[in-house]
Length: 353
Ligand SMILES: C=CC1=C(C)c2cc3[nH]c(cc4nc(cc5[nH]c(cc1n2)c(C)c5CCC(=O)O)C(CCC(=O)O)=C4C)c(C)c3C=C
Ligand SMILES: [Fe+2]
Ligand SMILES: [Fe+2]
Image (cartoon, rainbow, N blue to C red; front, side, top):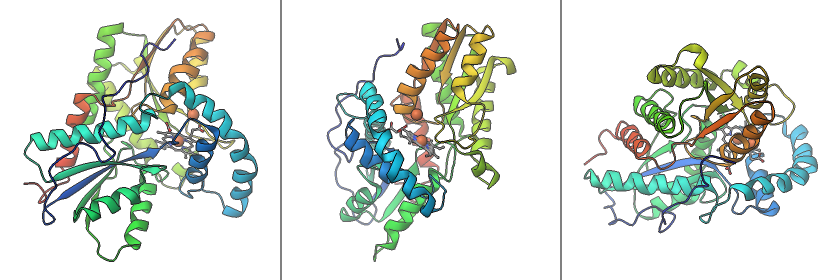
């Protein structure tokens, strides 16, 4: 069984984060925290709708449309939604998808922090690249409230064209539909931000205090196709930098930690080593205790709660491993909200009160 319960959330009043006095049109700043997106319900129908949007993005699957569309619509969208919906059902919460619930909560908590710091003119909202609430919808909402300055913060710590660039494509598309454009800034990642690294280190130390220290800490990141790296995506090197800095912060010797990649999709070569086969092999070779952390995910989601904390756990134990610890994502931890505050303040020069 997983060693951490399914997440519970405090109630978030609405999808535009905590209620606050309306900022004045002249000085209002909007911060848009954007994550990948998730289905509206854990049903095959909702998952199909979500996957159709997600997997039609040419940033995500870089195959010629003439080749990809028949595979997507003829095979993948006929089979995967049912299988994925079953997995979503295992992680779904009273507040819905963990990814959306945590992202809403991050927006709400960040807004509270900024208001407590006297920045009452800032409104923080959450958006999803795929699904709802969509990026355009949230940009429209800020626009309608008269907010003329917007900071887009994709919540992916490590830049990848498959994720970060896709958010910026969506921003570009929204801009192309506007006549009266706001001032817009964006961030492209925070893989080496010291506050982010410290929040991760704090999370690992707390887990060790509660559960003891394992033989190895595995840092598992979402994979991408190896080909993207050859074409210039800096994702892999950024994952390495995050991992090295976290290991250094924790004082880990080289054989006490490892970086792996999960969530492979399709038959092509993705970044390696792959998380599950690596842990299976190491369990067979005598590794008996491991902790897994997923530093590339700002919020727990299907890929962490089901793939890592259920599938990979089971595979490790079935191959002879004895203790499997899952260290939750940063989610709504106060060290992480603190890091987010520092990240956005670093971007808001001239926009702060
Ligand atoms: C098809 C190729 C995929 C690429 C490239 C990819 C990159 C990528 N994804 C994330 C973060 C998340 N992915 C999530 C789910 C998910 N990812 C893919 C495929 C690719 N991801 C699929 C098909 C799915 C859906 C689930 C499934 O059917 O298996 C999620 C979780 C969403 C949720 O609702 O909980 C996240 C988060 C990153 C960071 C990344 C590249 C670096
Ligand atoms: Fe993914
Ligand atoms: Fe997965």
